[in-house]
Image 1 (cartoon, rainbow, N blue to C red):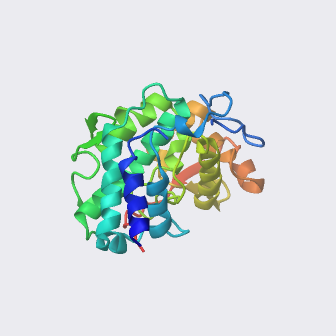
Image 2 (spheres, rainbow, N blue to C red):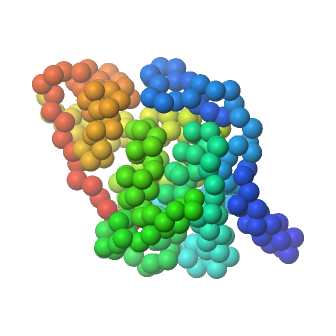
Length: 268
């Protein structure tokens, strides 16, 4: 037990040390800005993610639901997450590959959301916290920013212009995409983005009438991201569904409706 604790603490102390790229799409066209570089060594990542991934695997189930209560009750595991968040704050992504940097910022967003839920625990929805997304500042790679700034205005969306980030960013709501238990890295980023997109779109998109399709409100809020890639939201959705639903999305008279978003906490 002592040796295990010492090993864990050693990993925590090395979180700040630096630890590829896209696998080509086969039956789905590639997204813009995907690199075509040879695989890079593991140490090309901005941080080491082993401890963070172990925490995800311990507290997140296969539906993406988080056992916040148990995580909050463990002083050791809260301290391990605190250490990872501290490493996020002082990390230096400069000179790393595009995939390594994007993986870092996506991990940072999800870890900061979990960290802030635990800091405010107990809670039932992040929407009850007025400053959750656009008030509280976090340290990310030496800069102070809110979660909204990290995602929308300063880093992730404007810098990387990758629509599939919306299927791996998790804002602690039930209707968010599933929180995955694998930390993102330069080496697995493309595969994880592809898998998350192929999982999420068919799960939230369905025909509701002769010329009506319903999908997640994510596609309304971030329509410009999907339109920039595929021209229309319908065209983007059609890439990831099959059969009659794909055909319906290809018709000019099809109407897309957006389901109400359930902001209840993604807790279990």
